Every structure is written in structure tokens, then in C-alpha cells.
Image (cartoon, rainbow, N blue to C red):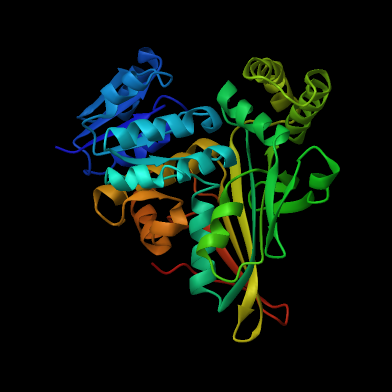
Length: 407
């Protein structure tokens, strides 16, 4: 009997991760664990597969977590915000000697989780953190481009956009606010430096970007952890940035305005209670702003630009992963599910705490995605393939060639 537990499995990301592992035979039992039992039962009904059960779990209680995951083969953690829940839930998995995958996208939480490496190694636990969209798929595509499509990779610029999801909870808004009130790491000229999204240091990195299937939008510095992990695992990197935005832009602008005004009052040190209040204010305006922006459904795109050298000439590789019917939930939940399946199939070796690029083969992950995506019944954007991925190469003479993905 193999068992997987999806923590936060009733949320927008968790239910996609649960669906991803449910379309395979890798797990005899899949537990949808969340704070509200009625919500888990709803997901169980939607997935409609033998061996799936819903259970109530309190992520603030180590005993509650351990009671639920102690006999699992792998746990998928989709409970955010990760700056609150990432490290303690990983600690519970390590102490329970259970392999672990999460979608952690907070820098400070990532640093705390990486510090648990020795504990995981001692308990023979494999933990893959940040296996969502960005971070996650972004890390793997950067590794693929740098190692397979170039002779040298000097810079990786990660950009992402999503919006129009049917639901956003306070945890999502809390993460977005967290990105605006904390330092954003930038790796530039082979050195780390810190900027702030809402301050002059960060505004210099704002850029208009054309996203496939979504449109042209400005992107802002985000404190996602790729900037601290990719330089460790891709040789020769001199620059790594991560920038993102949410549409409609009026909604993102509202978030920035609420945070700017709030920081004046709390003197740049907001408490969790204050952040929750800001999130409620922002969410109260969301439906009106989506309607005003004529946003009728979710879309999203992850764009990664790599610059380097191929055959002694300058070379650029651009990855675009897009969807015209799914947003953050699908883009983040699917990679987490794939990671759990790869651990179950022993396609990932080692013990300890790792970012995705350290232990996962990009082509193996993409091959598995190619097999499973048709079963998930998603709108795959404009690619016309099982994976909504476009790869463009720009050569030294300015010519552009789209590269087919061969798995």
C-alpha cells in the first residue's frame, strides 16, 4: 500500500496536485487534508476515485500534522503562506520520516527549510521544496536550457503572470503583500544584492513584457527563491532575476497602493493581523476590478529568458509556458504532483532538502508531464501539444527559430 497526503488539498493549488497524482496508479490511498472537512469531502467527490479520502488537519498543530502524515510515503504541502507554514510543516515531515514536496515560493521560508538539510539527511528523508510554477518549473527549464541548449549560460530572467482565478484566499494575498514589504534578492554581476519592490531600488527593474496568450504587462521584482538557488546549481551564471505581476493591472495596483499607505502607518513593520486586514481590503475590491477589466476567467504564462554562448556566439533561449483557461492553481499544483510521482517511482535520488534543479531531471519531468496532462483535461494554450511549452532560440545574427520539444 502506498499513501500520499495532500496538505491544503481543498485549496486551488492542492486540489490540482491531488488530481495530478489521482490520474496514475502510483498511490493506493490519497488523503485530502485541510482545515475544513466539508471542503475536503467536496474534492473527494470531484476526483471520484477509489482510495481517496478527506480528513481534517490543523496546520498550526504539530501533533495534528504528525497524526495525519506519519504513515504516508510522501506528503505534498500546499498550505500557505509559506513564510508561516513552510518550515514547521517540513519539520513535521522530517520528524515523521516521510518524503516531502511543496510549492514554497517565499525566500525566507526557503532559507529556513534548506537549513533543515542535516535533519532530513539524518532521518533519510528526501524533501523537494519550491516545486510549483515559479519556483519549480522555472528552475527545471532554466537547467534544461543552460545544460542542453547552450554551451554557457550567463543570465536567467524569470517572469510570470496570472489572474482571473475563480477564487483567491487571504494566504495568496498575504504572500503577495509579503513580497512587497520584504527585501527581494537579485543576483547581478555575480553578486547578490537586495531591492524593494515598492522602492526606487526595485522600480529600476520594472519592465514591460509580452506574455504569450495573455498580453503585455509590467513585471515587478519578486522575492522568489530561484535567485538564490540557481547560481549554486548552474555554473557560470552572472545574473538571475525573478519578476511577476497579476492581472488585471488595476488589481495589482490596488495591492501596491494598500501596502504603501499601510506601511506609513505601521512604520514598515506590519504584523500578521495588519497584513490580514490589508488582504481583506484588497479582496473586497477584487470582483469589481475583475468585472471592470472584463476578466472572465483565468489565464497565465511563465516566461524565462536565458542569455549565453553557443558555438562561441551569443545565444538566447526563451521558454514560454501558457494556459488560456487555468491560472496559478494549475501551473503550481501540477509540478508538485509530478514531484510526488517521481519520488514514488524512485526517479529522484538522495536524502536532504533540495530545490528542484538539484535533484530532478528536467527531461524526465517534462516526459511525465506529457503523459499526464491529457488526462487532466486542461486548455493547453496555443501550443497545440500535450505540454503548453514554446521554445524560441535567437541566434547571434538576430534570426529566430522555434525549437520542437523532443522527449
